[in-house]
Length: 231
Ligand code: BJW
Image (cartoon, rainbow, N blue to C red; front, side, top):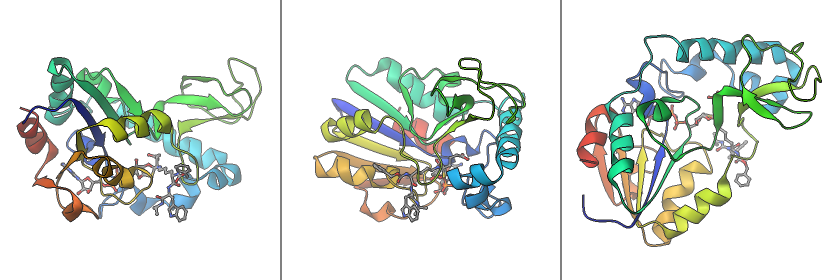
């Protein structure tokens, strides 16, 4: 890899696919079994909070099960961060914690974190409570019925956008890994970086929606293409 001063990496569900976590839009993906508007929108949560809590509690159990571990792609990014002396930001759309488990330090979870909950009453964020239900009181303000997964649902504003756009405008390398490019604003990040002069690279199993617009592309499983690119 040529020398760069400032690198932004965006990851999506594809980087965790080989770790046993399902992606969203594949034929056997997560959205095949659920209506997005029921489990991943604020309106869906208002209509049926129990369904939404059950959906996320099941995914928490899966994430915490022994068979789920980080893979070579997560590890390669953590190793790159450790040896890279320039500016580096890892932005993930993923709500799992596999980047952190692999050793990544500077991770921005723009769509939230599965292992956290948030109180809609007082705004406090904390480690999720086992089998979170609407009757559980908030540990901070003691209000019941206000706890929700700390997840960015459709029509909600993603997290840390100021820091992300600031990094995008000053990076000279932007790499998107394992994301289909269907969900905004993340799907537009490569254009923002490119507009400010960055080299843009797509690493994915197959071309994403905007794959041909990246300046460089490498296709294959993340566990192979990511370690090769960041070697
Ligand atoms: C591999 C691999 C291997 C497989 N190796 N690769 C019309 C109506 C309503 C809203 C909108 C609208 N038009 C636009 C919007 C906005 C909306 C949006 O983009 N909708 C589109 C669907 C059209 N976006 C929002 O609502 C966002 N908020 C927003 O826009 O706020 C307004 C605002 C923004 C900015 C400034 C000011 C205001 C919020 C979006 C929240 C997304 N949330 C989810 C759910 C999270 C919770 C959960 O997990 O349950 O986030 S949706 C889901 O998609 C999840 C993901 O992070 C996200 C992206 O998916 P990803 O990662 O790309 O996964 P896949 O499955 O799509 O792709 C996997 C890829 O991996 C594929 O390419 C495979 O080939 C590849 N792959 N195996 C390498 N082994």
